[in-house]
Amino acid sequence: MALAEPWQRAEIPGPTKAMVIPKPEVVVAMIKRAKRPILIVGHKAAETRLGKKKLIDLVVGIAKAGRIPVVATAHTVGEFSKRGFQPAASMSAVDIANRLQDPEWRGLDGGGQYDLALLTGLPYYMGWVILSGLKHFSQVTTICLDGFYQPNASWSFPNLSLEEWREYLKVITDKLGGK
Image (cartoon, helix red, strand yellow):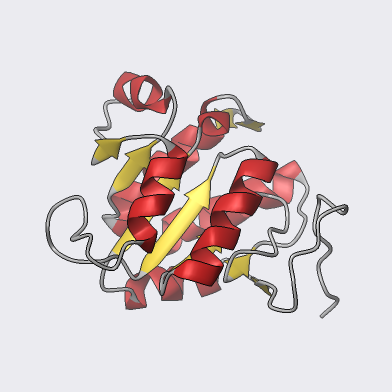
């Protein structure tokens, strides 16, 4: 398998780079294995069209199918509400990233630290910095669900076309038991 190239080439991610997710079933297995996953969704999820649906519609499907609590950042809480979905929390992306780095934080529900964080819908440069912080200062495994390779995550999709990206997300939802 060829190595993926960061979409933002001017930045240097360091010697530890994300493992490329060769097929969406890898994400499904990691979600099922996780004790406490969390899904962080940025504002671009409400703006990004993947065929007939928006990214946020596919994210809702994954969250429901995997029973994953969602943190809505920016103004996405309103977009989730329009779809009849209630996120577990609404806070800034930087705030949730800082909380994930805090070993004393007990989680949104007080049940303990999260072991898997899935991120999508953040601007690429913001995801780069947040994932870098999590890579260096937390024990959380991270998965970037965006259509661009994100080297600071633990796992990332390769650079995908919009159609490939939509298909990856659809397979994840289906394999988790969603519609």
